[in-house]
Image (tube, rainbow, N blue to C red; front, side, top):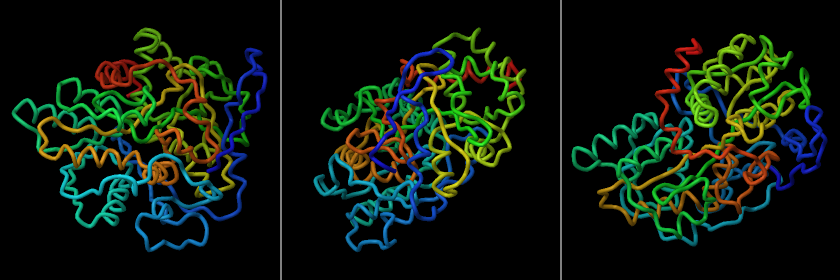
Length: 409
């Protein structure tokens, strides 16, 4: 990861407009050092976890782990995309109140164990801190909290979910308490509400094989994808994956059911190939089995961090469902007896150390602007996402019906 971005402008061959280049991170990966595996296949089958192996806790230097558990190197990942990285800004955990006591956490998804890894690192700092964790899909836990709250009080103190839709579903049913403004104000307004706050963002992206395609061959809107000759029979997507379903939901919200249906059918007619999850999609691109696909941005970065010379890059569409930015986030459950501890925990999720962990271990977007993203990515502010209320993405049932109706599922 670097703090430098390729902000050179170019003229798009399709519309003649000058704009910041959408191709970002390959130039930044020309760093020495062998990558360690930073991601592995997700569970597929419609789950909302994305799997991965945590970094080794080193800072990309000599590989040592400092004895001080608050040291930044104990939160930073490793590999060529993490080397030569400046210290992050923001608020350090050393400036926050201690975590002390026991929290009951409902953890939806959790990045294949990486969020649990972060909690363990917090516990190394705070010996008096314990977490009782219930794991399930984000949507499943959201429904569980809603049902428990309707029946009385949920045993959960805190809900961490990998998508804002699940957080919004619980908040919409009155199942949460308001977060203090001094906590939420650290995060851009598009990635928070009064009831929940995002701690790790992800952008929809188009991974493509650099030996098969140039970036200029990829339109800047997904609506044009069915007309790209190179994509015919060589473009991958993962319809069972929740991130794909959120993308289709965003398209349905933005363009309506009819136009979304037409796009899905056009992509099918163009030979879109179904894969089980978006890590496999990105890996298939890197291996040359397909030329491009749809996936969350971080899968290609995990591949590049593990295989520095893999011929894969990503590009971003602009102001459409393909440019959606979603977020993992946290909210405090109504009725908790541990609200003060839960607030302190959320503050730790937004600390410099935790944000550095998300940036360099999961390759997610930090949501605190003072912490830069990894791998030469543009910042969130430099992207051009659509204007979508992320809580609307919880309404996935009409999307599933549409995917079944078009035989995509």
